[in-house]
Length: 466
Picture: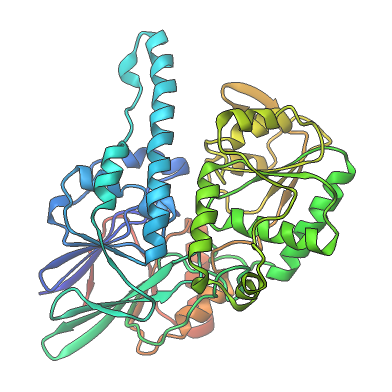
């Protein structure tokens, strides 16, 4: 039987990761993520396969563009086993419940608007609800440590390796025996950098014949982590000289914890001006608690802090804002506040309210510390829009905008190249999870520097691994 891979997401785009591997009579799905930005409408299209026929779902990590459609998959009949690391399980639980609540709230608002227009059918219902999430969570049955082999069948073995992307993230090596021959297929998930603030860095592997690799930053090099930390600290100090607030659109997972970690460093050094730091995100608060449950996944420096009895994410200036009422109170503060809120690309959540109240004031600053996909509000601001629409209202962009890319949890071009070139007996590389210009640049770079053959994957195309 042939080994075939179809990519039904993250093909010539960054989001919606979903790859179907068929081998040895099994159908194995690697990730089942939500499409974001310009591709959002694809979430409402039927799966191009029958969810009832999937035997295993392997989750590389807990970002919503890798897990966001799992409850929908279950709703449409999937009853196989879900395999992940233990941190990914806990992260998936809070991320999916949050996604269900966000969709419910958005539908309620849209339905009211559609009702007033006399066209209630125009409001699209949520993809799934909390009950679907709980049903999906029940299917997480296998929890693997890094470098632990697990047999899916007599002829298929999978192993997780540390992707260094977020807490519990993994790339997966799939060994397939066919008669007297064995081949190794690798799916990168999302890869991190070789230097990380909190978690351990990216692991390298030599075993891989067919490698499906992400390319989010396949066309650029990040600043070093230390340069970015310095740049961030300077942005904070400089911003407070203007007497306003600092808004930081923050992904609840990893980025929120990293920013708190750096602000704690500044507090310990005495370089952080007296202020109030608001973590205005129930999801980020929950994620921070999950981080503290898994210190074995941390790098040596973070472990040392914990051994000294220090919480890496908390210091006296920090306030956790759980309720909507606590969040609304922040908007009455006109200076001396650092507000961390999601979503990280400003597509929803509390950050939109904070931008609405702060973006138009010259004394304020917005510091972007994460990737902004095409079609998102965050991307529009980063690209220099003079005004943006937030909740139907035109808001002038007068705050100072900082973009600091070196915190990216994604590997940059040099690290991606190094990771791919480390594989021995590499037959082909398949480029996924990136915008076309990044993918083309990465493909050319692999050819030019290492003479590595690669192919940019099209949505749904059958890739036969001989």
